[in-house]
Amino acid sequence: MNTGQMIDRVSIKEVLAIDAGFLSALFLILMLGLVMVTSASVAVSDNLFGYSHYFISRQFVALMLAVLVGGLVLNLPTSVIQSWGITLMVLSLLLLLLVLIPGIGKSVNGSQRWINLVVFNFQVSEAAKVSMVVYMSGYLVRRAEQVRESWSGFIIPLGLTFCFLLLLLLEPDFGASVVLLGTVMAMLFLGGAKVYQFILLLFMAACALALVAVSESYRMKRLMNFIDPWADPFNEGYQLSQALIAYGRGEWFGLGLGNSVQKLSYLPEAHTDFVFSIWVEETGMLGGILLILLFALLVARVFAIGNRALQLSRPFAGYMCYGFAILIVAQVIINVGVNTGVLPTKGLTLPLISYGRSSLIITLLSLFVVMRVDIENKRIAPFAVVEDDTNEINDDVKEQDQARPVIDDEGQMHVKS
Image (cartoon, rainbow, N blue to C red):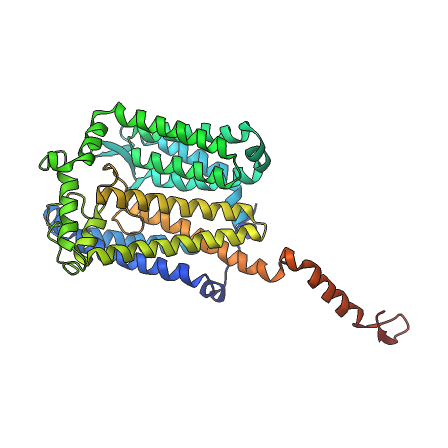
């Protein structure tokens, strides 16, 4: 495939015609993310680096890089992305192996999840989740009948997912494992897997995750502290208890942007995993609801774009949009659940909001792919015929064709009969 086939430039007019609800929600979430990283990271930036804008400056550069690369992604046909599915999956597996090698993988807080790229530390699990969505979208197209009719079509992707999960748990990254497994299961279900197969898989996954959860002492401590963080509020339950205090301070209307007390070295990871707690402390419960509604709008529009692609007989693009939407939903649910004490504490960022350059770049690039799908949908839509109206349209065309004047071989004009 030459460069000309790989690049299909979009016009400014097409960019401006991208789904307005999607663009509005995305823009607002990104702006709120910059505001919250600025606010939540002031104290930790000043304490660690003597410069209060250390983290937000790096986050802003990552955002600009994501937009720049996203502009290139916007010019890639989805057919090209589909052809890269297996390659991206294999590369992700290799990166998950490389990150476990001492000297290549970088360890932070006991977890070896990053590869030092000099410019920034790249979190491999972020790329692995998106790559798996692209691969699964292609798989559901190639093996659609097997997924719907046989166990083999159902088991093969699960075996591959198990390889991903094993490597993620060796880092360890329990949060990413849950998100990846949940996304693959949901995509299989949307791809037509039998309900009983899905229920059996759900049961097996729950048992496996429960076994993983109790296999390490630190995970058991997190479970116990999740049940009652106030039993040990100054040690194991410290982080969650401080997050809950942030909610109490925020009440309905919040303390005002920049006025959080918990971010002043009381709440650990205030600018990353627990940024939602700071957001609610500063903007109140109403602010928290508003942010969740913005995510709901974003995800709803991604599902709508994917659904339109399926209606236009573009299953790969449709499944891919579904997968990206599910990734965002899963991470938002888990992050907000952890912040509110509904789920056990685990390291998982709030997409597009928390500080985390790998998460921001990869998530935003996946949404640029969604934009590309929307552009291609709009290119195809004028030529598509809705099935219910096919006969009526065909009749109109025939009538118009019969009434069209034509010129015969002798140069005489007459109405076609």
